Length: 453
Image (tube, rainbow, N blue to C red; front, side, top):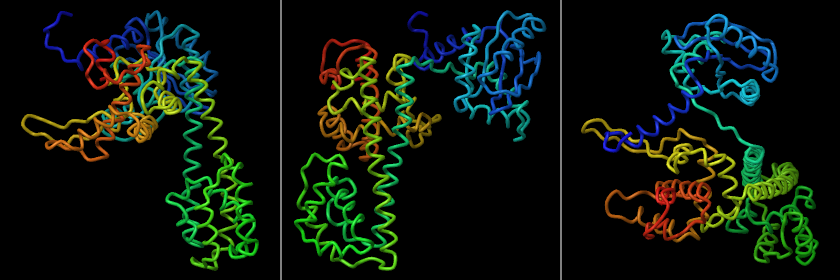
């Protein structure tokens, strides 16, 4: 269309999405809507006037629905006079991926309908919250006919592996955090003195090695270890350190304060023997989880290298290959996004404006995207701010200006969105990150990098 037609950027983006969806949900194809379950699949075949052409209940797993798709194609041709089929379902668990594979093998189209959209359609259909599998299948098809659906990502083997490793890492990080919190709670109850031995004791490898020595030898009474003397205690901590990933260097200040804490009898005495025994078992789980986490992170960086993106992602100052791998495990291949802004919206970090006529409400982030991607970008910002001058200047400007000053957390959120736009730019253009372009100081730049600046 010619320029000057009054269309906004949002209008053009929506038009492109509708055109892509319409290519799959063509009017000469019937819609096969499936309400997926574990062992029961309810399917309905309908045309683009929302008329039901046939129904079927299949007592089978999702990956065994090839026969259902064949019968639906016959119904679409025989009763509706349609020459094709588009399969539509909710993206529940792993089942939709199996159905997508079957649809691709048979040459059918495939699309997904958001579960939240089905929930809202259930109420708007007849103003009740009644739910049945047959009704849900019809509503899924009805939403697809209205083009209220989307085309899911079709990841190749490399991107799929990175996403699975990212999900595994997410679970291990949660386990490590859980161990830290449990250890702090146990010591706070039975023996709080060791918690004062370092600024952040639960993150100190020397402290962890020392506590492993204490819980393994004290038999519920830390004061018993004072008998062996400081030299033997220090030697025991030094031998334990490699088991926690230490490089042989012991922080003597931490060991000394921990040694002094052995004489402290603070805390609930009755709880101390059982709590320290439990803490010893928890430390073993914690140590094993840390090594499993390190192994997964090593694999993720290796996959990123195989995809040819490790050097590009690491070219952004303050962003390691691991941080980029964690983010890309949540986004998938960034070339499927039309712009860096789309990646930010995918994370739910985009501003959600509330205004009408002369009324202007408070602007917040939408939080409608992937929580894992939002968390990954947020965590990456904390390290990037210390080493990236452009990001640091951006944060200082937003928190230091006289008007519309942002709080620290709001500014970090904006920096996380900028980081996602930069990552989209370098991965889609294949060009390393340039601080001058990111700061808006370069005179000549590509459209993609300009949009991400």
